Length: 233
Image 1 (tube, one colour):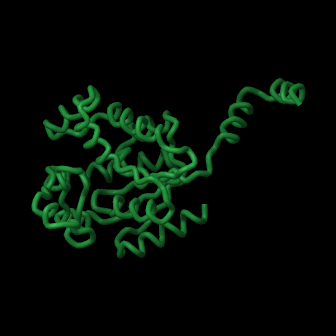
Image 2: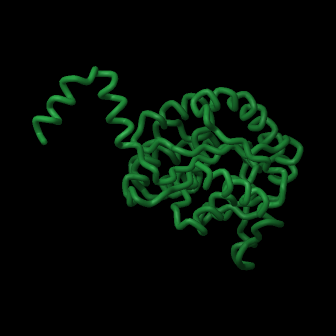
Image 3: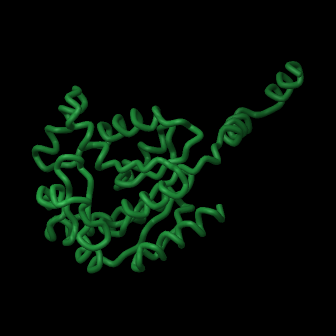
């Protein structure tokens, strides 16, 4: 058997060998990436998918908030950006993300949302061991995005997001401490949406098999659309 393997290796060209290795190690475990403008429902759909299929909900914003508060040197670097109301740079985000995903059972699927946001982030993610193998983009108009985000608030203690209509706070204690994040204010949202539209085509070049989902529906219908496409892959 060993001699047969040696012969196969000798006979294969280097390019063919690399392709063979990549194919043999390609995981069928769902590693889902949810993309879309702010307010399109990525967090809610990730939660629904995670609950039904027992996958890990990987909210990048929550990971960053937790890392900033953990007292580590990495967390201190991240906190310095958050104090200035600036997003953490990709290299710090990827350190947090890789640290988190490396602790996950590789047989368990996950749903990532909140990163990447642009071409550079997508390319950097592709260089890691945690490339997504199913990518969905939740489509929604800017007007609807702004309307949805105006009803959104964040728990400063847990970093968890709530919505006045679709996901209200679980208790009056949480409700009373909710805050509107700077990035959820209308002028900032409008600017973010403009950037998102600019980056969408670039992201599609990295993920040519990206599936477009109409997010201007009730959450259950969006979930059904995601499910049908997920199960058809």
